[in-house]
Image (tube, rainbow, N blue to C red; front, side):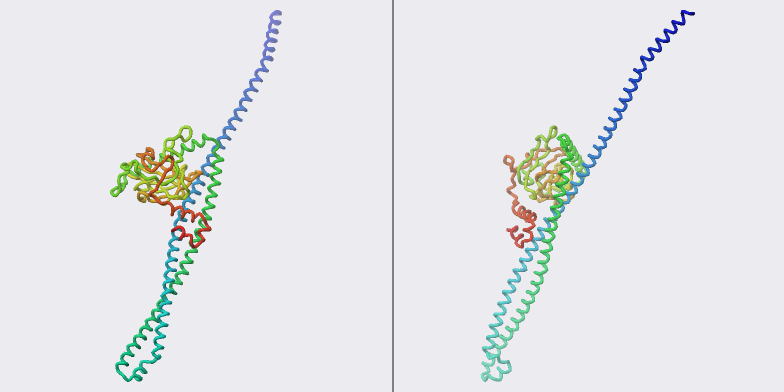
Length: 428
């Protein structure tokens, strides 16, 4: 028994020592776990914060895209209104010119009538300014009396007619002068509207530039740009497929025109310019162009390549103001990045008809036209369908854009708009 106690004591001491040795290890493990949990919480917080920032950034980007859409739609509407006003200015100037010509003719006629009346009065004076009764009493020879009475009646009737004509010409001249005042005032009102619209257009373009700059700052990498291209392409493909489905039940009038499929290699390009991007060439790391981009002068006319009906005419992300024309038999033509659209969905267009103006909508920096052709929703190469290309130069010699360019330059130059000869210069 006495021996067992020392043994038990030794065992107890050993256990106590072991426990004392193990205690620091347990404390270290607990501290390590606690530290890891803290790091995990910090990481989760950082992830949550980053996700929130990404969400806010995406919302901000969507807001900027919406602002870009609104700005470019306003620019398109204002440009279209300016085009209408320019036409009104031209017609108004023609009215004024016509009235001025009429006034000049009336003044000339008035002067001729006055001279004729003066001559008649001189002739009457030469006859002695005799009244009819005096002629009858003073003449002895009946033949002379008869002849003198005929002369008298002739001069008297001619004088009265001449006076009546002068009165009519004077009345017409007064009406012309009044009309000139009205039309001149109308012309000045139109000119004031043009200047106002031009100012509004400048402000809208400045707004667009600010939004575009903000978008560029928001997109920080080529990967994001490529992702944006992919989204734009997917959106366009989805739109084309939807339109195809909707248009299946709608007939296309082709009696007066050859079917689209028979015109391969014979179509005219929608505008003239330089081929900036070709079909099938690389657009980033994994994308290719499904149409062409024609670099052209801003405000230049864009024309339909063939007869058809407008299936879409609105703003689309990445393509700006976009026009899609259905040509029947599964064929469609697409015109993007326009400054302004002249047609609405459902309207018919003829080959070569003006449907839009060249622009840079859709967030583009340089003016040009995205042009694409689809067959059953599949992109085909426009170069195989259109004629008149030399190297990268696209010509449309059969279309005269000279007057359009002059008119656009007049619209863009407020100082020219206020000149009375501005429209005459455009017409020449």
